[in-house]
Amino acid sequence: MKISDESPPSLPEELASTMPPEMVMQLIQVSSAFLVTLNSYVASTREIDRRARRLRRSRMLLLMRLMQLREDKSQRLLAAPPPLPPIPLPIPRIVKPPTVGNKFWEREVPRFSEAQFQKEFHVSKRTFNYLCSALRPTLSKRDANLRAHVPLEKRVGVALALLASKNEYKNDYSVIAHTFGISKSSVAIIFKQFCNAVVDILFGKVVQLPSGPGFREEADKFELRYLFPDTIGVVGATHLPVATPRNCGAGYTNSSGWNSIVLLGVAGYNNKLGYVCIGQPGSTDNTAVLKASQLYKTAQKGKLFPADEDLHFLADHTFPLQNWLLTPYRIDEVCDRESYKTLNQHLKNAHKCVETSFERLKGRWGLLLKGCDLAMDFTKVVQVCCVLHNLCEEAGDMFFEHWYGTVRTFDAAHPQPKSKAAPIHVRDEDDDDDEEDEEEYEEMLAEAGAKRDRLSERLIVSAAAAAASQAATALPPLALNRPDNRRNSYPSPLTEHSFSQDDSDMY
Image 1 (cartoon, rainbow, N blue to C red):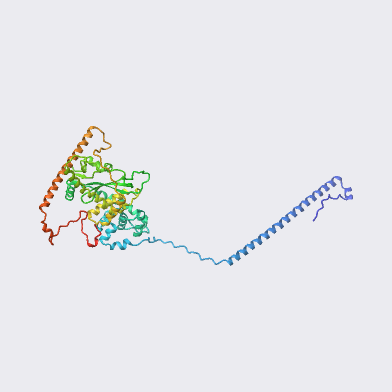
Image 2: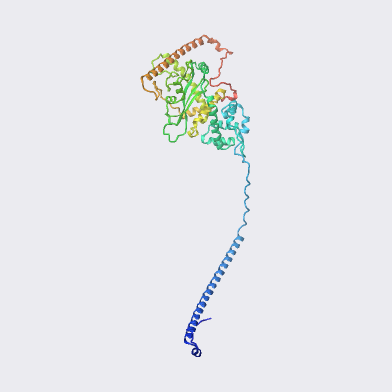
């Protein structure tokens, strides 16, 4: 439909002549407005038709594209291999899987002989049973949910195996964990609990000096073995290796060039340690270590020995002379030559008891020679080793010759530092320098010197009497050649039991 844009025609003349002019004008205006409205409607209808055709075309193209994509997907699915079956999910278990490791404790250890047991754990079965009974109230555990506890005997065996191990320390946890069939974390926890229990329960009972009448009994036994009267034991010190401490400078480096801490100990006639002081840095000399110990403070107060007994300890030249601690004669000291030689020789022989004690301690418990980290509370580990050392010496447990070799090999690579000789006058730092204290100190030195002189004279008389007795009871020369003559053999002072031919490796 096409609407003309020309102006509307005029009215017929007959109609226009009969109508008034005003009405004619109104009709013309109305017809003009109608034509304008009609043209606008027609134009808008055309635009709507054009947009509708455009939308239908777009919809058709979209449908064709979707059909093409669906066809391509169908072709790809037909050409691809069949999918794999789904992997089934694991079934959760409510029981803890078995740990990795063998059944060394459950299968092998019960069949060990006494010698095999001591070679593996460095204690006898009797000592092992005593440890289990003493530590049972502290170390015994109950079964947890879904997990069986480690038996008490196995926990003690794990700790002893770690203390006696000869491997590098960083691998000990792995080796022992695999041997006993437990995890490394369990080994660390068991070892820490064992050390805490031994120190809390046994240290004060096992590592202690005698008391009351026990002092005189100890002195008599010491004199019977080392020919030194009125002596309770020998004071000595040894260095134990430690890892390089952090932020400590060179304080732990000793005079031999390796890092260590000092173990101060008092050894008796039976190689047991009656007192230990642990933890001083390796650069500290023996005099300073002694003055820092509780032993020195108690002795300075006069409360170490009974008042009615004239008793003392022995020490070498690296410790100061005290009225309770006798040391060898110095070269510059004025004394009789025979007294100098006799006392120093007897003291040198007696000093071997503390040397032997330290050597057996380090040989039996190899962990002390591995340079452990101070962060693992190495001081408590040394205390535990001292307790176990005393228990083994008291029970007469075996000591194998190759354990000595381990210590001597370590000493060859890391020689013990040579401490300087102690000065003659050793004063406490908190003492005032007044004349009264100086006189008291000089009186103490004079008393200690006189005591040492009297002891030297007794040793000379005893040596002369022993030589005369030996000469009087000597056998005739021909008697030594008789076939039935046999000399009496006595056990070594380091061993208190006999061994079979199969145990020739034992010392």
